[in-house]
Image (cartoon, rainbow, N blue to C red):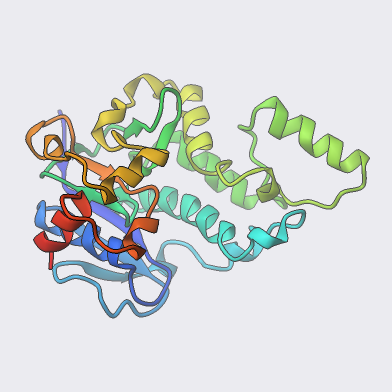
Length: 267
């Protein structure tokens, strides 16, 4: 028997939310989701209705030190935190903290998920998106991440031949220092979730792209342009949208855009 839940969680490391994240969190609350925002510091503009919690209770931020890039150190200001959030969302599932939503996912309408089943959607034709992700607490994928964190190095066992064998071997032969995160920002996130879903027979349970990624990648820029978006509100197949590209929030708001509508709705 299904156990419907509306419990969701997300992470913001510290400091004020970006305007886009503030708006998206407001949309989650307005849609009736029971939202907890985990943080390692103060979030002065957390919307009303959001429950704040200590992120250290889920996962120590010391893991970020192990996620530093060696070959591409110029990426260290951002990628280690993105990789950390991939581990964090899986550890949330282990502690029964509900569905993970990236803080830049805008929710259009109320929804629930079955707490005893996986809940995720494809972000393109193949890959499972990491911005909306849920595993039951006894799912074997959680054990995969526990095992990975217990290793001396954070090299996953689920990588394909190119990133799991070819690149590391080539770098070693050439004497090029590297760390596992140098293999790519997706190795603990959507690439991992896709490969592990196949490993454990859950890939076929992925919901279609339109659930949260109808406008994905470069198309997400349309959210800041005067383009018809009303179908998101009227078509029940669209539960939300991941705002993948957010540069538009720094430009003058365009009339007739989703961004104009969202800001007016949650002023």
